Structure formats: structure tokens, C-alpha cells
Length: 416
Image 1 (tube, rainbow, N blue to C red):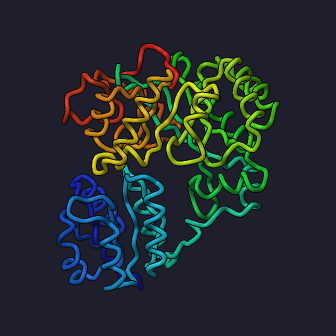
Image 2: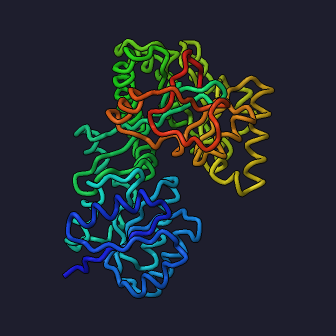
Image 3: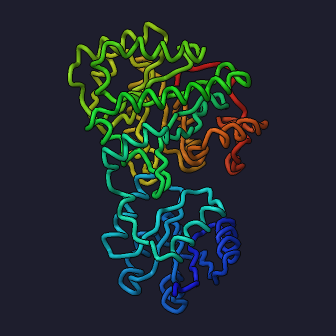
């Protein structure tokens, strides 16, 4: 019989209230812990069956608490409930599995009561160990998902840090699995590249993204969308014509689409890649180099290839408040971009301090969980529809803490 006691650990009282309400509604006793320094003593005395655990708290980080759980009561079920970067959550989940803990799929913030109840249902059923959360999606499962149209596209807002306003969104792929739920791209992008499915996957994302952009066009004709493209596709000389064909079918102007070239691989044929990228630019499509600073790119690529934008990898913004090295990478990237005429998008903005600092440095655009997590299309549409008078940018006073929807859109289109 499952132990129906929940220890909820988070330094945000609003989150604790949501967890308490959701857990008590399905018959669980809840002990909220706001100060993580009290966790060891409370955990040992309360003897919970389930721990909902935030990862980024003032008094301690989630990894420290995972180790205490593993050494004290390894049979405890752990559910990570956090708003940190997906890769950090995945790494922490893997650590929990390696420590022998009973892990259930994490919940991303903002928390939804339905998600909390669903995780408790899994716990009550005894199906708590899910190592497949981290394993690559098998080729057959990926093919089936594409055949059955189980691809889901979420959208993360991109905002103008200098003038204020929302200028567009990055399209982020997910897969809906019949038993595992929503699967993140870390589990299937490399598999798609390995098994020759990356072109089909990319154009499925492009089609869904432009379909949604067309629906937003009536609200804001300058709004743009960015779609990731694997370097493996750049050797295909038919790519520019195919992209334009999809744009034409959805009646979308080419300049409203940004293709983000990831750094996951070097170019197999640099000449062919340069030709493909140049033809895309000539057709009006905007180009960005994604995850700058972490992969195969060089400063030479940014000069030799027709990019308009570089996107500084999220790891730098997430570390810059505490790392002089990460802050130096951001400063030097911005300085280089100014000299060669590129615009810059900073990913991974998690705090008001970082947003303000990037704006002061002259960073053009930004995205991250402080602004908004990736949203399903209907939620993003609601987010846009609630635009108010508060803008992200120099005019917003520190400490105002903008809420989703309190963001005025930019009045002109800018390549981001």
C-alpha cells in the first residue's frame, strides 16, 4: 500500500500552495518545506512516500537533497518540479536514477494541478521507475510517431531587450508518446539524424509552425517564428525551394521565418552548406547560428556564411551571474557581433537581473523562463492576447516582476 504522505520542497509559497491543494484533493497528507535547510530533519521524521522537489533554492540545491534521500530512505518516490533548464532537469533525473531512487517524470513550472495529480496516480499504481525518460527514442517509435502525426510544436517568446515588445517565437519540437507522455527533443533529434528522418521531422515542424504563424497573422503581421535546422540538411540543394514552397502554401512572407542552424555537427560539405544558406537568404529567409559558443562553429563561420543573427547558448546566461568566465563570453560575443553587423539573441534568461544586464550591454533580443517557458499554441495565443502596457526593456523598473501577458509587442519586424 503506497504511503500517502507528500513532502513538498520549494522556496516559493505560491508553488507550495498549489502542491498542497493538488495533493490533498486526492487524499494525500502534505508537509510543505519552504526553507531547504530544514529538509533533512523534516524528511527523516515525516517519512514521506513522495517528495516534490525544486532544484534551485536559496538554502540548498536539489542535488544535495537527492543525496540525503538516497542515503536515508532510497525507497522514497521523487518528482522533480522545477523551472530550470531542461538539460539540468534531465541530468538531475539521471542522477536520481543512478542513486537508486524511484523517479517519476519531472513537472515543469508553472505547475498545473492536473500534472501533479497525474504523477500521484503513477505513484499510487506502483509504476514509478522510468529510466526511459532519458533513453533515446527507438527508431521504430520515432517513425511511428511521425506516421501518426504525434509531433507537438511549442513556442517560446522572443522579446526585444532594447525597445521592448515581443518580436516572435522559437518553435520547439516535442513528441507525444502513448504511454510515456510528452517526450523532449533530447531523446529524438539525434535519433532522427542517425536514421535519416531529420528532413521529414524538420518539415513537419516547419509546416505546423507556419500554420500557427498564419493564424497569428491577423493579430500582428510583423510577428516571426524561428525553426531549427540540422546542419545535415544543408547539403541538400533542394532545401531552399522546399522551404519557399511551404511558405507559399501558408501565404507567409519569407522574412517572417528564421532558420536556426544548430551547432550539433560540423558541415559535411562546407561549400554546399554555404550555397544552400546563401540561396535561402536570397529568397528572403532569415538565418541564425544557434547555440553559439558550445559546438562546432567558429568566428570564421559567422563571417563567411550569410547569417544575420547569432544566438548565445543558454548555458552562458544561466551562469553569468555567478561566473566571470560566462559573463566574459557574453560580452565578447556581443562586441564581435556589433563589429560584423549581427544581431544577438541571448537564450536562457532566468532572472530579472540577467534581463537588465543583457539590455544594458546592448543585447538585441532574449528568451528564457523568466520571460516565459515554451508554451502550447493555444496557451501562447492567450499569452499574446493578454498583452498589456508593461514592456521588457530599459523602461521597465527592476522589481516589477512582469507576468506572462504583461508584454507589449514590438511595432516593427526585426530579424532575431
